[in-house]
View 1 (cartoon, helix red, strand yellow):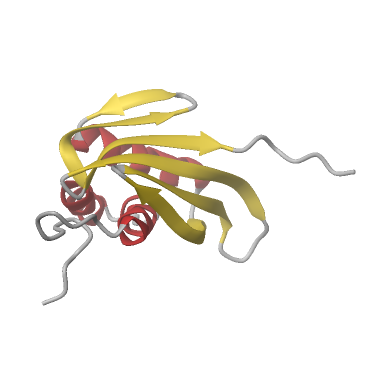
View 2 (view 1 turned 120 degrees about the horizontal axis):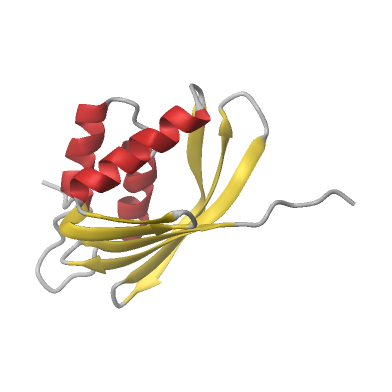
Length: 135
């Protein structure tokens, strides 16, 4: 049975790309509250903290709720998509992403930076790139 990003073998580093991609897809793109909560339970430590430009939340329930509010705010068809491959070592990982409507232009870009402990996200910093001005 292949190892999952949330349960790496003892002494082996987690697959940070799989972990951070799963976070985007299963937490920040899933509109089903029950599935999103199950994903947070699988991917985050119980006492995890998430920091974004608007503030911070702590705990799995709060993180799942925040993701749900973001999805509601942005509306149907809005998705986060990974850009490239996550990189990391020694408990720190980063994944660039872009977001927008599935059939529309990219409206938001940024980077998720995660502190990982025991194969799960302990702390996630959501860094939003400043808007690009034409010209």
